[in-house]
Amino acid sequence: MRIKIAPSILSADFARLGEQVQEAVDAGVEYIHVDVMDGHFVPNLSFGALVVEAVKPITKAAEVVLDVHLMIERPEALIPDFIRAGADNITVHVETCPHLHRTVHQIKEGGIRAGVTLNPATPLSTLEEILSEVDLVLVMSVNPGFGGQSFIPNSTQKLAKLRRMLDERGLTHVEIEVDGGISVENAAEVTEAGATILVAGSAIFNDRSSIAENINTLRLAIT
Image: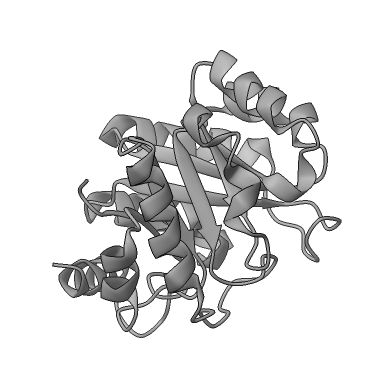
């Protein structure tokens, strides 16, 4: 699979959100990643469905995937709102879904792609019965809740093990997304381990270089 870059707007300048999303899209990214936090499952509050709705015209015009990551309790209650707002993918946490099969199919029945997410300390064994039902798996390489954290090194082994699990089951179409501390220093490492979608926040949205330059630098690190 081609490696895809997914800028996380959690690290963007909220006062210039539309402008910065447009800059990322113009730079050729394949995804825009939206971290939705509820202040309960993770210790922070972020976006709601209205933000997804606001950036959808930008991503739709460029055929860029609007990738929504629900770090919230009871995601099933808000999934319909995010589907109506224009999400193309929705991922939910294994840790918050007691009826994970039902929640995954709730997303699929909305006509979009469904993914599941694992926190760093959650074992891959929790995916055994759902892998064949999902379109992507998101591996958190930091503890969720805040941007700008450092990559947890053993995440690379987890990615490689997940890649083997998928290959052994013939599920080569399932994407592996990684989120947390992704930078030019570890981008090649995680893609070699099996990641196909790289979520990057502060590596893209920062004051050191332009968004386009940062995206290009990240892409060069994985080619």
